[in-house]
Amino acid sequence: MAACLSSLSSSILLSSHFFRSRREKPTSLSWSSSFPHLNFSINSITNPSNFKPNKDFIVQAAWTRRSRGEAAKRPNRKSWKQRTDMYMRPFLLNVFFSKRFIHAKVMHRGTSKVISVASTNSKDLRNTLPSLTDHNACRVIGKLIAERSKEADVFAMSYEARKDERIEGKLGIVLDTIKENGILFV
Image (cartoon, rainbow, N blue to C red; front, side):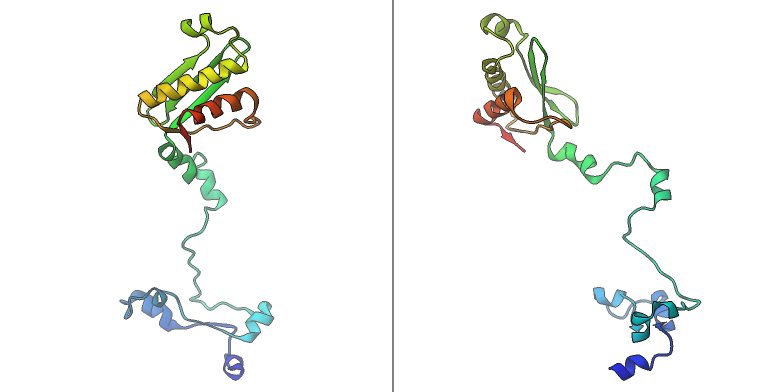
């Protein structure tokens, strides 16, 4: 084998048969027949400076990432996750805490329709709750969101925390209460 490899005259040989066969119909339909047959010598591995490509040497890259120039032409192209996330997790929970109230709503991402809303600023809760921002109010909001979502046939939703937001404290209480009332988080 060493004698065979050392007998090759050039460092990498691309046979003209390969280029001719690319234009003709393949004789075999296996996936391995679509790859070129390359012969490597020991010299090309140990000393890459001797590499001299033939005149017909062509490199065709199929599944490569986009070049910087190509990315600059389409800078607003969204990633696969950004394009499919709306359909994989269509219902999104949005919780807002102000100094005086707690607001929560479940929206459908694709249509931007509001599925269920609960707020401590509503008339029925404003008059019955002693405090509109404490932990008990968070539990009431979570329970109302879960009940109203079930009425609208929504049994799974997702919550995307903001950049520096931790799921703890009042937000954690709202999410835990929703989970306890039978809603799945995906």
